Image 1 (cartoon, rainbow, N blue to C red):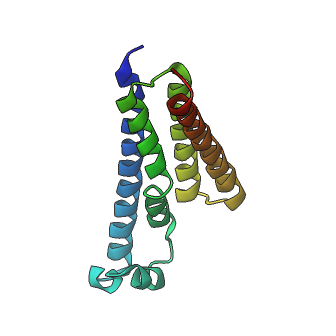
Image 2 (cartoon, rainbow, N blue to C red):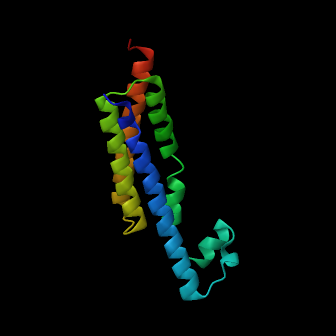
Image 3 (cartoon, helix red, strand yellow):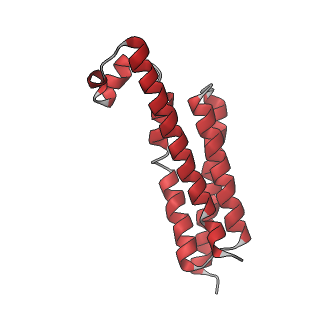
Length: 141
């Protein structure tokens, strides 16, 4: 199995971060122009929430630096330890897909229960990744 297959999900997650950052940037610039708000009035997150009511993209951007960090660590650990197998690759892509769905929902309709199901799916997939990694490290030869 080609070991770099494990790195493609990492690239896909980086692309997601870039897409959400771009969405956040476009929305902020449009808001500043449309409402004639000077950027200094939104210098802190507290100021931002009082001035700009739509916080979906910034909230999602912050989310992408929380639990996904554990995905990055697990993926790089699997890669570095040479434990790459098809189940790891499938779980990694499943996690990435769930995060894309979560981000899409969060940045658009923001229906909380739909977003929760996408988040829960990603959490369960990440748990499976870590359990499989732990098993491989502790018990597999």
